[in-house]
Amino acid sequence: MPIDPNATIEITSFAWVPELARGFVRDLRPRWACEEAGLGYAERLIGFETAKGEDYRREQPFGQVPAYRDDEVQMFESGAMVLRIAERSDKLMPEGAAGRSRVLTWVTAALNSVEPFVFDLVDIDTFNPDAEWGKLRRPQVIDNLRGRLAGVSGWLGEKEYLEGDFSAADIIMTTVLREVSDDALLAEFPNLIAYRDRCMSRPAFERALNAQLASFAPEPVPA
Image (cartoon, rainbow, N blue to C red):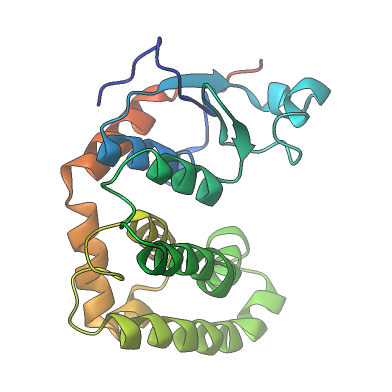
């Protein structure tokens, strides 16, 4: 779905981020969900100073993006947004309590049982590559993450998606796997690479990614 300034769904993102963050800011998640669900959305672009302000923190207590609102609710946290969008479409959430519970479980697992371990590695590899503490800690971080990836890989097996058809759970898990900063580690799990690439090849992902990239100003935005 193209961005629609008159849509009832509004997703807040930064108007500018450094090059290394482009394509990875977490408003990508609700953008992707809207694209999969066929729901138009408006984008609201803000600067870092706005994000720090008291007014915005009443929407997003941590001064981060994304923030979300529609004609019924106002939210923060990208996983919650994806689930909210999934509630409004039968394309991202199965029918029945059992299937819905499984999708909810995997969204929670991706954000709580996998992503923190991924970010431990990103923190070293991207933000502290030369720090002595990072060099000392990295082997343990790799081992910890390997265990988490092994759990996902074992569950996925040869399946295309985590729970039957493509769902909200796959949006969140794919965006987490994209963040893994060690290609050699991820190569130990060929089914996870195939799964990640399969999800990223979906037209809705490409549209969401292109929309996010197109939204960034070439220079920092102060407001």
